[in-house]
Image 1: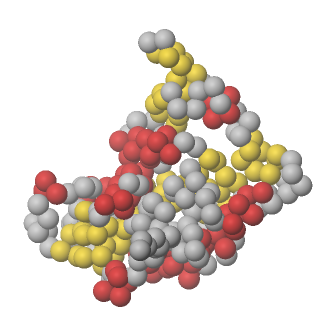
Image 2: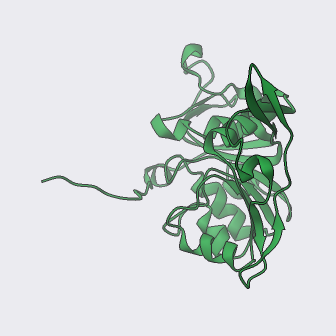
Image 3: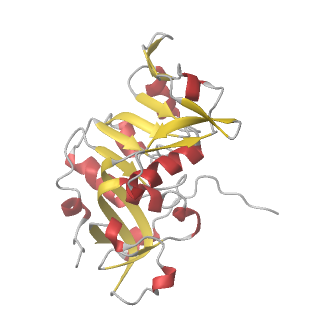
Length: 251
């Protein structure tokens, strides 16, 4: 039952090149930076990543992206990540962009053992009809486009069929975790971390505070330990290293 692994490098030691990863985080909040850095230091590449966004400000997944270690991204947001946009338009990176709520449900469904589901999001657009550029040819043309998806009517409303997502590994960050893998997330870090954790066949969690079993009230657990295989306790310095994407002040 004790799932604690002493170092991030040890925790990701068996992640091979070409693996698929579900990675938690929302913007720069709740990003498993220590585990991502450990993967970078191992030199693992050709990764297929599922995450809301692909890092920013040379932080998070942007570290792997800039090093050319990511082959495919399934996500919802490119945002201000110029290197992400450059690789995508240059044909160096395959990108599947999907609605944010659909991404969340595809991850959750994968963890819940639901193979697919219907949603009205995307009906009447290229999300359902196909034709979204997954990979460009580097010269402005589309080398690979998304296929059409099944559309079915329920109660007079059309819905598109979306497949669940399961990945080889998941990397997440929690504010608190115990030795059994029960996790608690802080505010917006809870947006995608629990869902990414559910989708991974092997889920690795870096935790800012490691506590003993029983110290977390069962009613306060955001993600049960059944979804977590490895727990990496962070040092105080690692736990305190949190970047802010846009600092706003008022006079």
